[in-house]
Amino acid sequence: MSTTSQLAKRFREVLLDGKWIANTNFKEQLSDITWEQATTKIDSLNTIAMLTFHIDYYIAGLVNVFEGGDLEIRDKYSFDLPVIDSQEQWAAILGKLWKDSERFATLLEQMPDSKMNEVFVDEKYGTYLRNINGMIEHCYYHLGQITLIKKMILFKLK
Image (cartoon, rainbow, N blue to C red):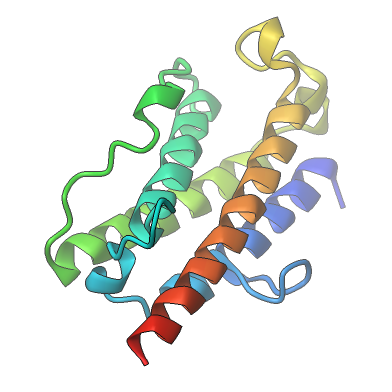
């Protein structure tokens, strides 16, 4: 199996369908969350909706680069979640995350392994491999947060 295929598999595991590392994934954790739960604020923690938006913001930004565009994302905008006040709005955010995640994985699978050692946009960002591994690690980091916040919300509601 090529390096890019292995990376795409790892990416799909954390976002869409895996159980290997965390015994869960974003899709599983978010599938039964209501918009009210997603926007519930607990102390100074980010909301589940904010973390979901944040992850998709970066995935979509990398997809843009993979498709030949510029790196347009900026950290300062990565938590600029629009107001959510309905299940439909929450479903749209989730739908965008699933679509962008699958697009990311598909584009990654189509890359030649040799691309992994190329500079990603600018030398200061390192290689494609570094950035893709960083994205996977970033997703697991926030998946852990979402899982804990979800448990806090569900415990608080009981």
